[in-house]
Image 1 (tube, rainbow, N blue to C red):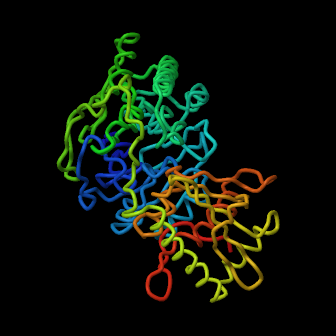
Image 2 (image 1 turned 90 degrees about the horizontal axis):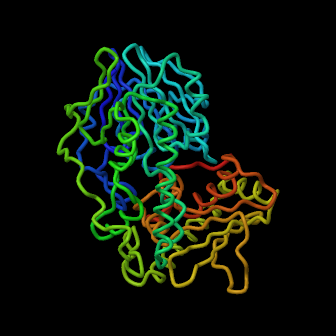
Image 3 (image 1 turned 90 degrees about the vertical axis):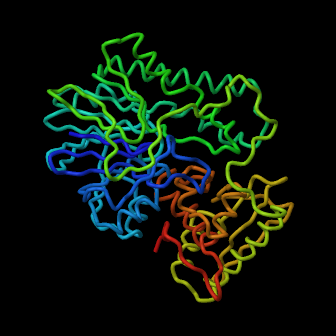
Length: 467
């Protein structure tokens, strides 16, 4: 087995002629430049070997990148291995993939000489890690998964022990603070972040004690913020990657330790894992890790954190209102042509709630609130009166993300998969992939994800409506 590191969570795994690519992310940036791949590299997709399988761990957009998947599909039609996540499969089929297999936690799958075992994650959406094993070695790619409750169960399913653990360092250290962006970051917030990072490091050390691999590599942590908002690095990456490795070395000096960066190749000699720099023909312009945390958590941040995404030009609210007017015209365009799927969408929502869908736009001086209403022969998208409450189903979104969607710069699907929206289901409706898609995402797709061009909207790749 040879494991090539391509940056962030992307791996090319080769075993006796089989080529497997995991969580492909080919571009230099992510989220329309809100993050940069760290360290920098250029991937020449056309120089990759023919792919037998693409493995996707979960739906977040740094692991399920639409542009990279479009590029792969233009070069072939490999089988795709995914968690049991219908919206994820829906989007893959929209991209033209036809060989898609959902895999359950602890289920195994054979790809040539490699056995792939899906490992669970203790989160409320479909997410997997993967154990890769062949006659030479065993690598547990934990990706972003919160795997710690399942270590014993995973180890009991394997025929032999794990040689290399790719561990999700810093996972969860920042996400719970996303709603604070744009607010004052107090000293107590920085202290909480440091406590969260230390707690996660302790969790990983307990897992190392249970797994006892030959090598530990901090992984899926290959991003940084651009220069204009580099202060965010000290919130997201509270500790450098080497902190985990130093902690492992202090307790188990016999365990090998390695930082991950593009151009490394992991291989096995007589069952012993070894790492060397071996970029391959598909990598160019590779740089080594440096110091992405140029600001220290102890330093007070500016009173207002700059938005991570480019702000709308001119007056933000006026520009956004003009774009929402385009969205209103798009809804009317569908309604005038009696689009049956659009009408069915309204009827399905009205079974459990008022035939309406609510949009709340954050990130301005005060939130903007809109409602999409259906009737027997029409649909109206309009601003809520000041006295009215925004009900459910509802989607909350930042003005910068919404502007990007309406300007046709980004996909609604990218925003949703990147967990940059807040959704609310009707009262009494259980949380499930199907219900989130039906009551929150599909209406957003029709109301927002069609840019007005000429006489009608231009469809974008993403979620389709429930027929």
